[in-house]
Image 1 (tube, helix red, strand yellow):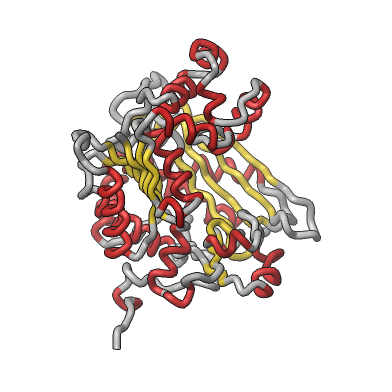
Image 2 (spheres, rainbow, N blue to C red):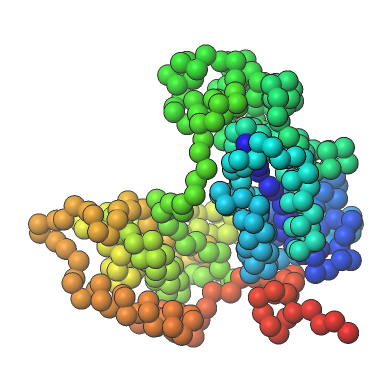
Length: 419
């Protein structure tokens, strides 16, 4: 059996733990730079505040409906997530942290356990130790545990936050209740293709011939169908896999129309990507740089430009990646445009101990020990103390966070004071 534990409205719940005045009231959390709504409480959802709503357009709506709007407090959310996952690790040694607010547990050897009681203990312990409410879905496969979790979440009063699919009758009933677009792993395109085949529910999908699914889709969809049929084909992932693409993208606090500021930002983003690349022991072949103007600025047309560079040899050197990124951004920069966002994306990743060599070009052998020394010093002194010469040594990227709560658990100067 598998259990999926999902934190309810996680970002909003984290804020409520340290501000009880928000309990039972509508709360909305904004994205980077206080851009748009990315999370909200059930009360805000009932008011039909849409996900992704740009706050400058919905500011008056939030005020009229007494919706508390807060900036994303990622240090707080990350720390609270770690606390929840550490608690869950005590309920089963086989755990897969699926996202910041949900985890799969494989319940091996639990055949004689009262799973409902066990799920209740999970929810109670997490709530008592962290203040975060959760829902638990338990089923014979990962995909079915996702379905069970959605059912538990859909009616908290009746389900008490727990749903267990432990019989064929319950499985069929649950799948007939689940719309095809709400199935884990089925996106909008796949949803349309399945609906064209007459699939409106998850149960309809399980009734398609398996050979036809494998022929017309892929092994991923075939495994999903088998999982929904109660045949476990999606295993627990117990190891963190290396990323196949690394990106650093940021919206600027202000717009920039000069090349000097743009290149400084691109160099900083490229350095961040290179650091992440070395952390996972990989090299890259491809570097993509993009620039975006402000899509909400009515005084100029929205402009988006991209440039991709293919390297003749794989590298993890900040010097090489930054130089290539700066050269690329200079080719797409346009005078007179107010840029609001930029980013660097590196791809074509290969292990740093296993890649094809180039006979005529290769990495400067001095770069490897230099990068290692820089990483060690930055780690020792806790921060990017050593930067490239084309980076602003006194400048750190700062998000626009005008509605930010305190870092209650990660900053000793901001912990709650009990009188």
